[in-house]
Image (cartoon, rainbow, N blue to C red; front, side, top):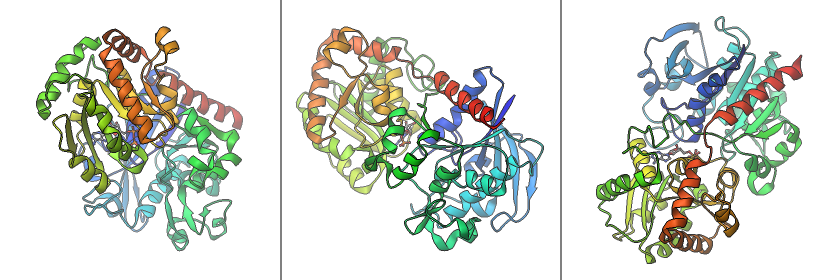
Length: 476
Ligand code: ADP
């Protein structure tokens, strides 16, 4: 039996702002499903929305004085996930999201809130909090960056893995917070936690973890370049031997058109028609000759949707349609909301059931990201026969096989790729999409190929299992 502690700030379905939650929520069940004797427990902050969903929680340990207040470690189960929940009211019992207050701004004590999570993770690993001790500690993103740091500084002989879900978030904070974060003064140097005159908890983790992973092979390679590494490319080049890219899967119990409770379920692309009609009716979209394109996304610069605003005429000229669900940058929210066209509908907000209906009812899903560590919505698109139109970057490049004469002939094409990513190239891709859509035979092949493309967790879970095994083997 190999025991793994996963330390994460989000875990679907309990708390989610993005793909990290999906991964943290799906990996434990996927590992258990391999039948290799891997047991994962997931340490998660006790946000109000998490605590209110727990049933039969048990107290594992009382913690005195954790970053300024008392705390308790609870154990509970959510679906296939064995949870360890850090109940620390002074840090997590607040209105708002996991990272932002109701005013939409970062909580000023975010560094301390997640340092506390890491402190508790390191104490669990050291056997100080209850009888369960992991063989491996696996943290996610900057929120868990101090986990490998504390383990190393404490001399705890539990190897660590840190997964980068998005290097854009680096856990930056002023140097004078070092003491409150439990970072030794001597570690405020460029070869540990200091990053251009600040602390980066992500950097501390990247340097201290035994192994690093990110969520696709292409993003792993990209991270080592100045264009994508966001200032940490040098650190990652130095740690090249420790870094691997393991693609995310999707949870097929939640995201499969055969079992999805939010939609008119279907087994073949034909079944999409009822979902499309329902979606068009819901949003007052007319029947149209062109494809119904959907977008489900955070609205940020990363996602390249400003380019879609520019490229949209190409879709509308061919009587294509756009339905967008998302929220984020005010200028993008305003830009999409201002479109006044019968073939365009926009919903600003976050709506999980609607995202399922859109992915089932759309003909194509657009993901023109400037960078995309893995991306999940194109994977949902593949599984639902909703043809992905993606930028050639990160996990998008690794998961979508572009339609060319050769890939169409060999029946492997699953979508369209846009490269280089410009508004003009996106316009051209949308025009091409309309052409393909109007060629019923080819379109049906694309949909079938997409639905047959493997997107489940099994190969990825096996890759994590191999990583843990290697890591433990390396220590013997
Ligand atoms: P990122 O983590 O960068 O936001 P991913 O594609 O990896 O991007 O994951 C995004 C996840 O969040 C997907 O599960 C997607 O369906 C979901 N999502 C994003 N925006 C919304 C929204 N407005 N409503 C519902 N789900 C959303």
